Image (cartoon, rainbow, N blue to C red; front, side):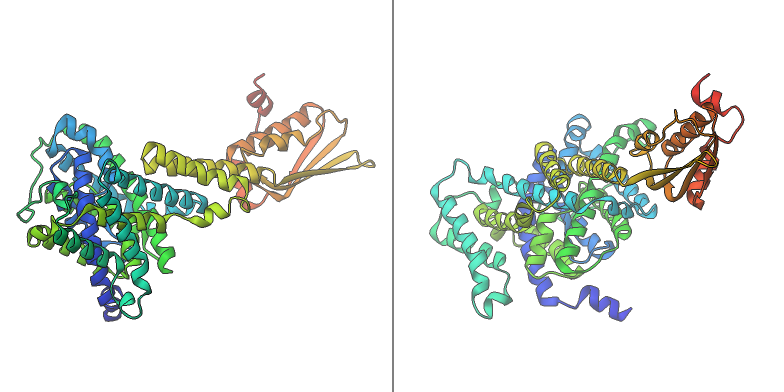
Length: 495
C-alpha cells in the first residue's frame, strides 16, 4: 500500500509540480474557448476542468494523464444548450458519467484491443493537425508583434533545454509563458491576452443539482447527447491513455479509466461544469514537462483554480502568443513523423487506414467518426487478407471412386465463396470426403457454405462424409448446420 502510494504520487515530486503548473496555464484559454464553442459561460468550462482534473487524479486508471473540458465534447453540446439551456447540459453531464461508469463495470475498456496501430497513428496525426489548426485564429489578422512573440516562444521551448543543468530542471514551456508575459508587460505590447478570451470566475464552484423535471421526457431529451458524450469521451480518453502508455513505457487500467471518467463527469455536473475527457495535447505537455504521476494531474487542477481565483490579475496578462507557441510545440511533438517516412515501407492497406482516419477526423472534427472509420476499414482489410489464407486441394481414389477434398485455413464470410468454388459438383463420383482437420469454421456463413456443398454433392448422387471438424467448429456446425438433418435439401435449396 505504502509502496503503491509512493509510486503513484510521490516518486517524481519536483517534475510533477512543475509540469502541473505548465498544464494549468495551458488549460485556461482552452477551457474558455471550449465553453464558447458549447455556448455556455466561460466559468462552466473552467469549473469543469478543475473538477475533472482533481477527481481523475484520484480515481483515474492512467497516472500522469490530464482530463478536463475538451473541444470534442463541446461540439456535441451545442444543439442541446441552444435548444434546452444550461440546466439540461448539466443533467446530460450527470447521465454521461453514469453511462461511463457502467461501461467500466462492463469492461468495455478491453475493446481497445480491436483498434489497430494504424488507427492509433491516424488518430494521433489528426489530433496534431487539429491542435495546430486551432491556433490559426490567433495568428490571423494580427500585428507583427504576435508573430515575433510566437517565434520567440518556440525558440525558448526548443533551445532552453540545451542550457546545462538549468535547462533540465525547469520545463521550457513554463519559461516560455513566464518570460513572454514579462516581456509583454514591460514593453506594454498591445496584443491579445488570456483576459481577452472571456471573464474569469471569482468564486469557488458550488453544489448545483440541475433544475430540470425528473421525467421520462427529460430523459429522452438528454439520453442521445449523453450516449454520444460518453462514447466520444471514453474513446478519446482510452486512445490518449494508449499514447501516454507508449510515451512513458508504462501500462494503464482501461476499465478503471472508464469508471474514473464517469465519476469525474458526475462531479463536474454537480459543481456546474460540463462533461469532459482526457486531453491529448495537455497530457503530452505534462509528459514532456516531466509529469509522470497522479500528483501532476492534481497539481494541474488545483493550480488552475488558484490561478483563476487568486492570481487572476497576473493570469489575464499572459499573451495568447505564448500559449500558441506551447500548443504548436505540442502539435509538432504529437504528430508521428515516422508515419510519413514509413508510407513507402508499410503495406498499402495500413497506409490507407491511417490516412482515412486522419481525413475523417480532420474533416468532421469528430474523433469518434474517424476512429470508427479506421477500425471498420482495418477490419475489412483484415477479413479480406485472412480470406485468402484458405486452400482446398483434392485427390481421386479411382479404385473406390472417392474424391477427397482437404480444406486448409479459415472459413468465414469472406472466404465462404472461395470455399464453394473449390468443389467440382458435376464430377461423377460415388463418394466424396471433405476433410476439415486443418480448417476452422467461424460463423454461420461458413456453416451455410458447408451445408450447400454437402447437399449439392448429394443431389448429384454422391455419398458425402465430413470428417476432422475440431471441437469449436463442430459446435457451430451442429447448432446451425442442416446438411445432416431431415429435409435439408428442401430447407436449403428452397424446393
